Image (cartoon, rainbow, N blue to C red; front, side, top):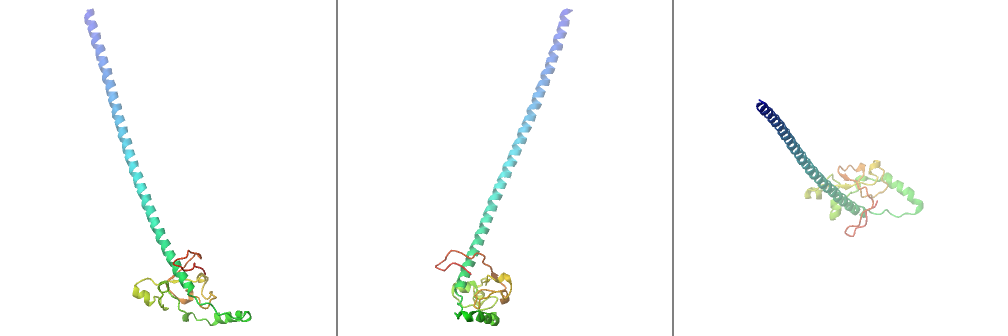
Length: 200
């Protein structure tokens, strides 16, 4: 009798141990699955972050290249405009020297009777190439060469018509009516090909 009861107690204990073992295995299995899922999630986040960093770096590199190209082109255009304007400035005819007593009245007379249409404002291309230029919106040389015809603005251009006091000013003014002019802001540039520095 006691032997049978002991046998039953042993069976019950073994079943309880089995159930506990199964529960522990199940818990460990679920924990391992959660760990693997977390590892995969972290790997996905890392991969996405790596891709984002790569895209960002590529975007920044592309942006830097575009900015450099733009700045380089603007610099070249400005330097070319300065060189052309410097050549135009050197071609201006000096005013006649008059006695000090007559200089004021003579300047007033010149300003009063100045005829802008009688002046020939050379475009930058014609001056640089040493060509004859006309007063057309696009000179014949630029039309034949299929290039943009540009004339440098006088430093008084932004003040309105009739503000320039030079009779033989070689630069464009608002009253001249040229459709395509360029404005050179810097007054000092490096000498190029033996030409003097740009100045007003």
